[in-house]
Length: 399
View 1 (cartoon, one colour):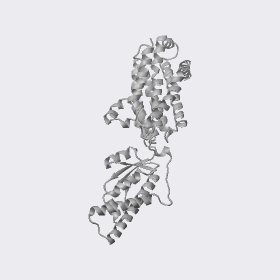
View 2 (cartoon, rainbow, N blue to C red):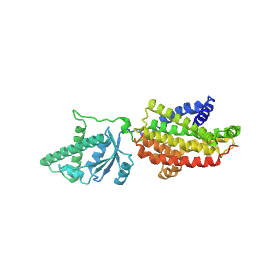
View 3 (cartoon, rainbow, N blue to C red):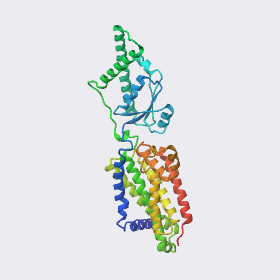
View 4 (tube, rainbow, N blue to C red):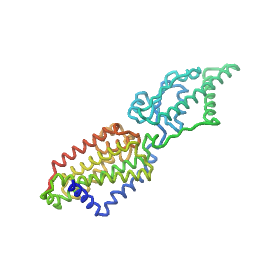
């Protein structure tokens, strides 16, 4: 173990002997995080209200009014979906709840009778109370406005019949709007607000930029293991070490451990910068975040080891490190959210480890998912690591 740690520390020490390393290790990642985060601020979602899927089975004036009332709420954001789409969003925890307005909703309210709305919350979602309050308040407002509008209709009929059903409906709609305007601004009211880290369901610019640039630049650091291995091989260091009592596996593992430690430290520093300076919330589960960090680091450094066995010169290793890092990062959703891309594209890029890394980070940061939820991402990243390491160690040569 002592030899392993000594080789790992020596690996890190040699890397930072070149002062320019700190530029790529910390300075450029921070600069690009700020730039990309600001640029994405006007592109990706910045709505921090609680997302609620809205299923309208009534298709009436009052159900439409309920949707509009919910969507103008300061606490929740209504998203009109079909029942099938809403169920999928709820299962994937992309919304906090699903509200279904049953057929007959409008007619029942106009008749002054009670009717139940079906509100389903995502399991374990901490926003359920705020959603219930917002939906209850909106439903009460629509119900009260409907009763006022119906009373107005009755009073109008006692004075003079309507010329047509269209006139009657127009009068009702006008009365309903007037009643709603009054009810929206009562003399006293209670406003429910939620902390941003609870409400966030879609990544804002800083969140997308912070996670995306983390993956991009840490990928350069970790795939950079290829350049180091080529340099050591050409310089004869590996060959000389191989004839010492130190086992070849210890030599290789020590260098990999040193590179892995560099990547993990870099991620911690960038996460700290994002949290303290950009106010990015990095999720509610430190364990889930740690699993994504370690599994991504293993997959990336394994890719570097494998690449190092295919290239023959240091310049090749350096060029391919940057090329693969930037290409994988761009295609894997690090520079823009994959949600804005076509479905077929999202399916194709699942062959890249960066796609699973960004998906895992997004689930932890944006959707507050825990260890169980991100296990598929972790296992797939570990699968990438196993394949890359297997190929790299099989091809490893010391001369």
